[in-house]
Amino acid sequence: MAERNGFLPIRTNTFDRVFISVVLFIAISLFWMRFLEPHAPLWVSTLLSAILGQWIIRKG
Amino acid sequence: MRNTTTGWLLIAPTLFILFITGMVPFLYVLAVGFLDWNTFAANPEPRFAGVDNFRRLVFDAAFLKSLWLTFKFTLFVLASQLIIGFFLAKMLMRNVPLKGLFRTVHTLPLMIAPIAVGATWRLMTVPGLGPIPHWMQQWFDISYVLSRFPDQAFATVVIMDIWHWTPLVTLTLMAGLSNLPEEPLEQARIDGAGEWRIFWDITLPFLKPVLLTTIFIRLMDALRTVDEVWMLTGGGPGAETRFIGLHIWRVVFPKTDYGYGAAMSLITLYLTIVMCWLLYVAMTGMKEKSR
Image (cartoon, rainbow over the protein chains, first blue to last red):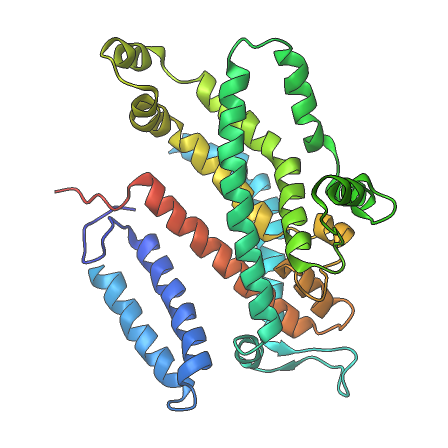
């Protein structure tokens, strides 16, 4: 897979970007459940993670 | 094209075995992590629980404490083993008297099963039976009782792990040091570079692949330490040496809370992978972008 320079501080290929997105998705979900769920439901975190993941995969 | 097909056919059995032994258990644990499944519960049948196990986990003080203890333990043993292992490797590369004997004796702990290491250290540290409490009392006037003092228990577990696994670090670093090219080292010495400068600018960069491999192996090992600690302290006193592996074991086997145990295992795996990846990025210089 070809590597490229995006906004991330490292050169990445598609697998790297998908990996980073999954890692962030899990981290954000756990953080949300621990601190933010009383104020906003978990699907908000899932939506935000999905948007962030797509942004990373496309532009990262 | 034919070569590629032949290549795939040749590695197919290995890939198949890897899939069966690696991916199938992982996928099973992944599925169980989303189940409420406790055979001792009022309803022992597994039922889908969504992310409830993970929600419970982020508020579980016992789990978070065991996670913190595991990271502390990993940091201490990894740093100590790398430093001690490097100095021992440097020493054993030189022509010192009885080098062969020392090398053999130094490697002996590696051949002992972790459970036996734990049992041996247990025997050495039992008050009234083992020599260590006796010496600590005689020489330093310290009351050494692992089942009473958490700091002593933690320090002893760390020292036991260092004793057991430093030889592995020494061996891998010796392999790395013996493959160092002579020319840059000689050139640096001729140019008047000091030992520290040579170490920092030549030895360390050449050792990077070996160091990375060693750190990965030891990091993953340290994060899943169970048997040695189980034999030595049983996770005590209280839960002061109950590392994550022991904690998961307690949840899965005596309490038979399979869903929650699987969720904890998944989070531990997640943290291990993230730590290894961050380390890899930091050490291989992936940060350097090409212009």
